[in-house]
Structures are given as C-alpha cells and as structure tokens.
Length: 253
Length: 324
Image 1 (cartoon, rainbow over the protein chains, first blue to last red):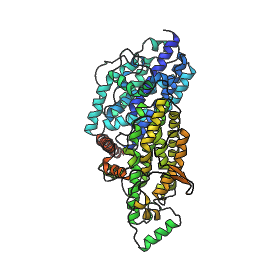
Image 2 (cartoon, chains in turn blue, brown):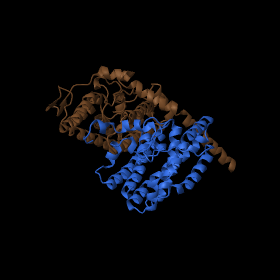
Image 3 (cartoon, rainbow over the protein chains, first blue to last red):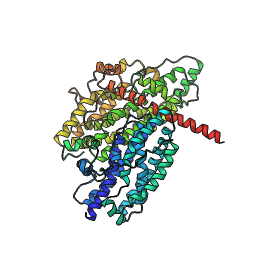
Image 4 (cartoon, rainbow over the protein chains, first blue to last red):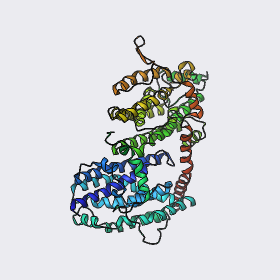
C-alpha cells in the first residue's frame, strides 16, 4: 500500500466514524426524553457532521480523484466505508445511544489528543478544532452514563444491558492493521494500542461511578475499519443518507 | 403565526384592572411579579403554551428530512435549524413558567390534546423542496406575527420573541436559498419546488387564523397587547411580501384569482378553505395522529430516563449532605 493510499484510508476512518455516528444521533431529532436532550443530541450530531466535512474534505484532496466530502459521503457503497462497527449500531433506547456515544467519545478524545501532535499539519489542525467539541461530548455522555447507571433499578438494568451489548465493539478501535502501522511510522497518527490504557482508565472510572460492570472476555467484533465486513445496519443507513444523491444524479442542492 | 384561535378571557372592571390597562396603554412592560388580571394570565399561558408546543411539534416535519438531507452542509443547516426550534420551545416554556405553570403541566396538556399547536405542522413534508418551502413560507408567516410580538406587553414573552426573531429570519433566508437552488435546478427539482408551493401555500395562509369577522377572541387580546395585529392584516402583509418572491423564483402561486389591486395597494387573493382549517384543528389533518403519537412516544419512552436522572440527583445530594 502506498503512503497516499494509507493516508486516505486513515482519513476516511476518521471521517466515516463522525459521519455515521452523526447520522445515527441525528435520527433522534424531535424524539428525545426531554427538551434539553433534544438540543444536546442535535448539537452533538452537528459537531460530528462538521468534523466529517473536515476529515472527508481532506481525504478527497489527498486522494486527488476529484471527490469532495459530499461525494465521499453520498456516493460510496458499504464496502468503501471505513467507520468502526460501534458507531453504525442502531440507536436502541436512549441508554444504548448514550452508552455508544460514551464509549466512542472516550476513544475519540484519546485519539484527537494524540492527533494534535500529528506530523501532518492539516491533521493536527482538524484535531485541535474537533477536540474542543469532543471534550464536551465526553463530559456529557459520561455524566449521563453515571446518572442513568446510578439512577433507578430500571435505568441501571437498561444501562448494563447496553454496555453488555456494545462492549464487544470496543476492541476493534484498538487493533492496529497495516494502515495504522504506516500512519504511526509516519508520525501522522498514534500507535492505536497505546490509546487503550487511557481509554481503560477513563471508562473504568465512569463505569465504576455508574455502578456498572464491564463484561468478562476480550472478544472483539472486527471488519468495520477495514471495510471487509460491516454489520447489516450500515446498508440501511446509507439507503436513507444517500437517497437523494442516488435518485437524482448530477443535481445540485 | 404559531398561536391560532387562542381563547381570550374577559377583563374585569376593578380599579386594579383599570390601572393595569393604563400601564399597558402607556407602553409599560408587565413583569411576572406585577399584579395582573386572572384573565390576562390565563390567556397568555394559553398563547405562549401553544406557541411553545408549535416549536416542539414543529421539529417533526423538518426532522423528517435530516437523515435524507442531500449534502453534508444541508444536513448541518437543517440540524441547526431544528435545534433552534427546540431552543425556542425552551425559552417559551421558561417564559410561561413565570406565570405559574410548569413545563411538565403544559407538556401533559399538549399530549392529551387539551392544548393545541399550529395547524401547519399537521401537514406532511414529502420532498426535499418542502424543507425550502417550510423555511420560506412557514417561517416567513411566523415572522410576520412574531416581529410585532417583540413589543407585546408581557416582558418575558417580549424578550423571548426578540431572541427568536433573530433566528427565524435566518431560517427564512435558508429556506429561500433551498428554493432558489431547486427552482434553478433540474426539471425534477423545479417540479418539486412548484409542488411544495402548491401544497403549502394555503396551509401557510391558515397560520394567521380565521378571518377577522370570524375571529371572536381578538379584541381583548389586542387591548392587552398580547395580540398586536388582526389576522387579516398579517395575512395581507404576508401575501404582499411573498408573491414577488415566488415570481422571482419563477414559481406560480396556486391561486388563479390572485391579482394586484392598485386601489388597496396589495394583492387580492383567495381565502384558504376554512372548513379544512377547522378539520385540522379538530384533529383531522393529514398528520395530526402521527405528530401527537410521536410526541407521546418520546415522552413515554423517556420516562425511565427522566426518573433515572432524578433518582441519581437525589442520591447525589443525600451523599453530599452525609459527607458534610
């Protein structure tokens, strides 16, 4: 794999994570448990879509094949998406949505903290911009996980169920492949494995305060970041997200 | 207008009520702790509640297209807009709370049908052009009403309106921008734009409420400066403003009797079908059932979340006290 190809893959991974999660979170619009949550969810989705424009915009430039962020978002099929499996999982109830958000946010913050020092100035710039938003995301999702985990017996049970369901999707975030190794060697991105300690410490603190138990076992579903095997959910998400661009090719909106 | 057919209470003729009216006539703002007639308070709660509910239910027809927005920028703009609407609902509920009614009480009255929201949100959004037409026409009509309401007599309502109007006029421009893109686009896009105008024109005119001759609640509300203009005045102003905008887009307003009247300096136009309007208010609009079902589902599904967060807050304050 050439350096450019690896760099493009890496940027798609960052941008597809925020695109797919932003889309999922936006599905809540108008349906949240309280008005403040409606506003906060829309705000989170908005941040993530904004970050997507930056990551995929840069990916398009690096690729040099005349694809901008919109073309990458709207005109690729499932096998070309590079998001982790965690973010494409359905919303479920509000607890499941917030647990997914929390697990992703902690990884995202650790990743962006390292990317701020990237040898690629444009990556460092995007990370510096995004990190301000993501610090707020992790604070909010962490507090919500604690509040609901340590709330009523029903909210506790729902949060434990969400954690049990989503935990097997965490491992994929930390398993490096050829792309990650190439990025780490070039100083563009960190060694993924190194993020795990930061992640475990922060997640451990929050889940302890939430009185939730991390499931046993290290099993990790894989295939999202490499694009080799997404879940069935992603295709349905794309049928909505890409519909207008696919149905009316060439139109400007 | 997001408040329609708000039933106004009668004024009493006590000395206090007369002094109160004199303050309003002198252009003073009434603040929550000031004395006010019971009827003024009740009418305002109805009107502000209905306005807040309209913002909340109004998230749904536009939220319907967020996951299908055609570009990342359009998705971000639409998300920001719907988020603003939730924020408007929040200001208005807070302003209403200063009159002694809680947000939860108002919400329950919306959910069980005791309180209404604007008829316009009971119409479906069927194509992407509807995101343009809603911004252009619906927000445009809302602004017609809300700009004068910045001068309403009740301080918190007036201040909420000042904030809301800034955002609404931005929304209207965004909506018109979508319409311009569509109207200058492919044949299919032009068709979508015309179709959106055809479907939403008369429902937008209905937003101002029934004709003045049938509007039984206006007089007292206008004396109290809760309502600033009559329904027909605002509707005329809206038509006069909007018709040239439609012409600029190359779209046809779906009213064959529409024509400029030199003498009155405004357009003559066909009134909306008021039977349809009253049907929608009674719950028989195309989307009444879905809209209320969606709000009820959000509220019911969210109960465990609200209970959980409340239980946690209580535990935390107990632990804090125990630690002291």
